[in-house]
Image 1 (tube, rainbow, N blue to C red):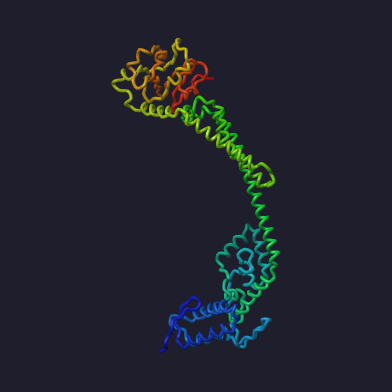
Image 2: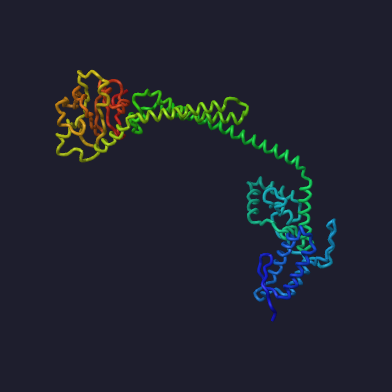
Length: 478
């Protein structure tokens, strides 16, 4: 019965006899003493990884402990430090038996162009890397087979990271000699590269590369700004043109009340503000793009600041027009719509609530004695209704005002004559027009209608039908 210890070597845990541990510890210490200080840690780490790999192959279901014989076999495979004669030319003479392992396939990341797949295949098949690369280039022309195969191999083949794995990739024996030689080659190569650096030249090249990179980025951003600004200006121009041409259509289509914008301000001022708000940002972007391309251009910044101030002024102007607009009319109109849609709007008190009701189409006329238009702005309103009959109100009631309105029922239509006495009253006259019913309007009535209705009324006398979009549509216009 022997005493055992638990050790961690190369990241693996092993149970080892006490005598075998002492022999292994002395062996690793001897290796460390024989190696230059600057290489000790890396060489010993790779040697321990190789020892752990050998120990792991010795563990079976019936054998769980590393013995002295196993340590002796490791020493025979790896070699003793005193068995190597190392001089400045890096020539080695080993007196023990050399141990070779089966070659393994790894990606050679030290000689890679992309992932090191082709360099690793060249090591595995012992051919020059250039031939493997030519084969894969040839396979690219067969429906991209080479590209697909390369990325598949890149995923499934591991990279050679440790010195032991790099030696396995090249088919060289993994012992003290090869591990130390491989590490020394890497150190010597790195040292020679560092010593050969012309730092002044490197600094100058870095400065030139930085300046060149900055210049390229500046050109890319400048061209991008110019392209985006030109496209934006074209889109803004056509959108504003459509708005100007189809203003009335858009107001009706989106149910925007004209009172939302101050009706006393000319329409061209509104369109100018909207055009400047949407167009000027792209002008500023164009100037910035030109400045990035041509750094010596003058007055770019002062021009951009002036345009920005003009843009702010347009934004403020549009806001003022909206603030001064009679937005309360919009709320009032929406409220009336809701009241109109209620099925309880007509009840048993209909004669008291309405000035009149009719199942026929209505003719809205103006009494000849009415003269002054400006005193009676927004006095007639026509709103949609879900009722079956046309009816009219003055304010919320109707019966006390029946003496100021004139009506006449004919075979095909019901005529309502708006009198001056009616227009002088504070309540607004509202005509509730069911969907599908018609009303006849003429040029004399138009000035007294709400502004939102006037845009739908054509010159002359025409019939207008209330449709599902809650707007009046001329039925006899050319």
